[in-house]
Image: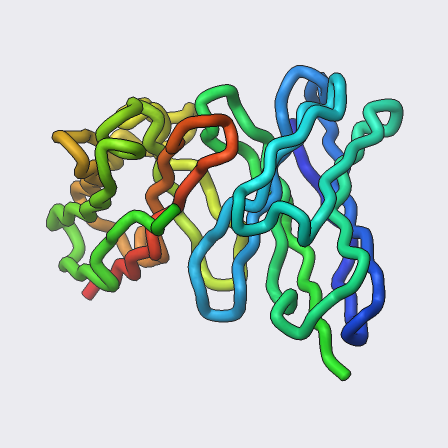
Length: 118
Length: 111
């Protein structure tokens, strides 16, 4: 079974750093991209960017470029999303998703809730 | 890039059909046949329902179908069932490998 399993919920203070993870299984991790998608409370989906785990090449949405970093470790089939300095406005659910060349997403991870509060 | 435009809500009775529209521009929906649709139940991760405008992944009932005309894509759900009640999001590639845009989402209520 193809699965993406994300790390658990996080509670952080503004200014702190954070890295969340997404581990793939049941398929060749380097044969598909991984995207990250944000969903703020009560809001819709926003594509943040994607990585090609085979060579770690990344593309970012202009809205998120410079605010987050996407990386991957193909040796352990894991992708990451990280912040160097969190803001309260980063509070959201974050999903990873296996991404096809035509940018459709299947499957999705279960989501990681990030709460940033002083 | 701006979000694609979807109706905030639609509703239908069991057995009926509903159509959810997704309007973009010639730079996204109208420019590529890379429109996908996702179903999201409360507290759950999104699930792929349609990709490449009208293709259905294995396991998705054939009650779900997709189409596109110009800058507007549509998701039609026929034979509505109670379990179809969820939020639905459209998504389109918008070029340059850095542009993927979602719709604002549509809440489907099965009356």
